[in-house]
Image 1 (cartoon, rainbow, N blue to C red):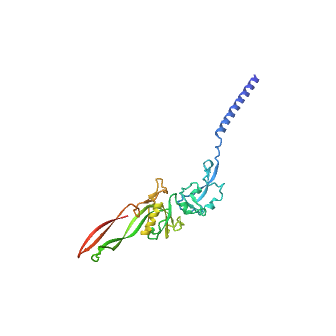
Image 2 (cartoon, rainbow, N blue to C red):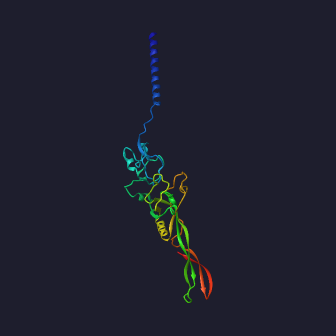
Length: 291
């Protein structure tokens, strides 16, 4: 009898140990630590950066980034520990948002190549024109802004004058006036003088030349405009080139809106002829097509 009681107690003890062991194993599975995510330190921007802006110390910072999402274009601290010093003074070629990983193709490093040639988009041309505070919006036009290009030129009104009898009618100028025409719209300013970015937060840059980004045909139009008159720039509002997300539309193209120098489009010039014959005077309005 005693042996039976002892055997029963031993069996109960063993069953309890088995159940307790299984419960312990179940608890250990639930409490297992999460898998470790491997990361790399990637160079990112602290704040948003505009095209043409000069990289200042503190513009970039190192940030942990999941290694599985690190592409070959990202700059890692392991492979480029001294890159921050190298990028100081570089020029931003493409827009950055805050916290965006830095890629070398979006930054023009001084000394590696011409900064201006890196700023000009494929198929476009950099064209410099003479400006003054009066023709350049008082110095408030900065690199990266959008402008319209206007040409002001002198026009001559022609009329007739009395001529000796038998020599016919003669046309001579009697008055002069001016006309203005917008020839290009939404043109991107690449630089003012040799400045390709706003300097130390200054709101104005007063220069003697402005470099514009134009198509080859538009470059010819501007060259012609400088020959026939004076070129002025009018500053466009920033919101004209802002997308739905509030970011600037950097790939917006300039548009030719004027007819200056465009072949095949005749312009009508109106004048008045004063014809004197046998002591009588007659005024005749004339229209002449100009190519």
